[in-house]
Amino acid sequence: MAKLIVIHSFKGGTGRSNLTICLAALLARSGARVGVIDSDVMSSCIQILVGEDILRVERVLQSLAGPLPIRQIAHNLTSYLGPDTQGKLFVIPKERIFADPHATDIDAVYNRFQRAIESLALDIVLIDTPSGLNPEVLLSAAISDTFIILMRPDKQDYQGTGMMVELARRLHVPRIVMIVNEVPPDFDLGEVKTQVERAYQCEVGAVLPHSEQLMSMGSAAVFSMRHPEHPITHALQQIVASMHTAG
Ligand SMILES: Nc1ncnc2c1ncn2[C@@H]1O[C@H](COP(=O)(O)OP(=O)(O)O)[C@@H](O)[C@H]1O
Ligand SMILES: [Mg+2]
Image (cartoon, rainbow, N blue to C red; front, side, top):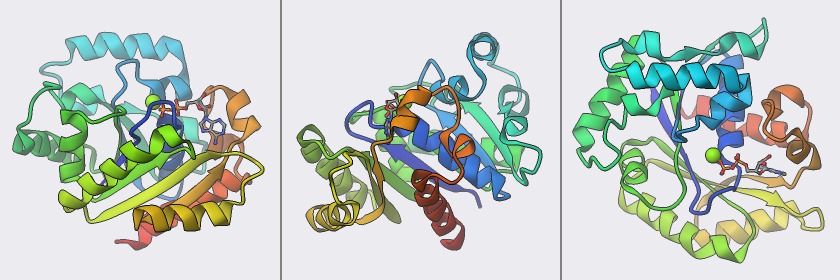
């Protein structure tokens, strides 16, 4: 059965969308059939990959989407990942999963999610969730196999992040992984990892430095594709490998 990876952060602007599309691209390139559910109404992941024009078409399609099968609604973006890509990458409009953003019917969400997986024969699904604590995040976390919590080394992130870790534990999420992003260059990455592990008693999957290259790219491309040898890409590749070996 497909695995569900939920990517969340308590605060906004921590790098969720960039991380989601990078992980999705790396997974697809390594042979997995990957679905991305973009929580952002403006479909930021799609924007990153293919730009505004298709975004507009996407929004029109979504508004007309009701009875269309998921295979016709999902965007197959595999061709953007290069000719030697072994897997597939689809972006699925979130409305097809979370029909009503205030719905709390976990079975209905789970069933819609399963139908999307089956019709696209997916191995893995990544959900890029909105920040903060809301019904969509709770529903996603409750059915997730892995809950990735992204944070920056910033006091504003600490308390909310702690609450999200605790919540994921109470929801019995099988695997909770923290990722620290945008660590300033004068910090020791290994030390940050140890401190965060100790503070939250949680697996830390990666500690990613602030990168001028990533920032100056301005979300106009998939960083891991543009910079395959960058330390950030290597760190994300390790997370992808751990997803493969986790079964
Ligand atoms: N490690 C990093 N170094 C520098 N800039 C980053 C890094 N990670 C993310 N960013 C930048 O932060 C901004 C927010 O990223 P985004 O992925 O849209 O966050 P979110 O989805 O959490 O709101 C983007 O401009 C992105 O380029
Ligand atoms: Mg985002």
